[in-house]
Image (tube, rainbow, N blue to C red; front, side):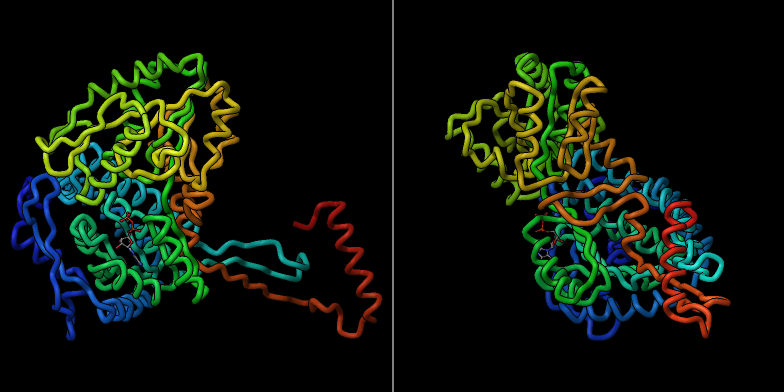
Length: 526
Ligand code: ADP
């Protein structure tokens, strides 16, 4: 187990070890040009620094990863499983240290940091268990039963590129990579420039668990240079971030016909119907909206409440939010931490100020908290927001939510779906109503009597975005199979697909057509 160093600079030895894991500091021709300081978001104190990579660093990373991947693809499934099961236990044992690093880099509260650790544990366990079943050769019905032996094989793509954001730097930094690696791929990853150590600490544990050196390359640096070079070299791209960047990368990999998975922005709605249990609403809504200070792609930013319970929901939500404890540090009773940086802080201020100027009522919050740290902002609930105000339709990615009254469930569904996004949605209702509403919400994940946590943590089920919120899915079988190519191997025996050698063509044609017809009727064909 590694020793903790709560909320101070990363100790010299560990810092050096982590930096040595980046491709930027490996081999000849190392790009030493620039360094970026990494700060503790709560205090502004410098905790370490990383190199800002260049395109050569990415090229070298792919060369090293490709060589390692060729050997890795031959590694037996059981050996791969063992590494990731050991990794699981290492993360479990070192969770406090990992949460310290995550909290420092992001400014989030302890519980949101724990969510990241739990996510890594769940993905390591699930994909280590599931991989052999997903990757093993499957016998499939052949074209001519008895004469065609057909199997389906899954082949790793090669080296997967991964570009991740700062909001969940540990979970997004390794959970998707776990599936890619178990499937037999190498990975070249770029963490967000401000949060590299949350990913690097996990990579350190992967190597300690026996992952072959060079298989997982981390290149630190800017999105424009390092991220873009990754998109130019990878055999598949996994991206989590904004819709704007997702489109740029989609164009880039599209040009090379390389597969792409992206989880992008959202403006996630939550519906409360007249038959909802309001105790559950009061308990769940604060975390649905304000986990990680709302800097969460699946976080709720719009609440539509049926008129029968509107006043009571507003009263109870206000009560729950005003009791929330905001602050810095690792105490478990803190409900919400800081925003990550000045840019986010300014964005949140702007959305709230615009809404206020347009005539919206601030039910709670609505102001910065410089007494707690430079980027703290109160959890904010708006009501009576006039039509046309940006906060109604644009993603804030901060602790700001509005509540609107609707006259029916139908109106709530229509408003919830009236967006270019489709990432997450939620409905609080009696179970029957909840399921009916859920089946009509156009989102990749829908929580019933839960904001987002249940869909996110159910790692056996694919999750992702519809519309402008993304493509492909993470989690579930799809979350691993997307990193593979499918190979169809059909072996023809005894009878040619063109029929017996000297059979008249017309006779064979009729025979085949009749056989297919009979196969359909008697259902002996797939
Ligand atoms: P966010 O708003 O969460 O910062 P971004 O999409 O800007 O979302 O960033 C997510 C990740 O994408 C970061 O690692 C960032 O460095 C990277 N990135 C940003 N712009 C580009 C780009 N043009 N090409 C490749 N990666 C990029």
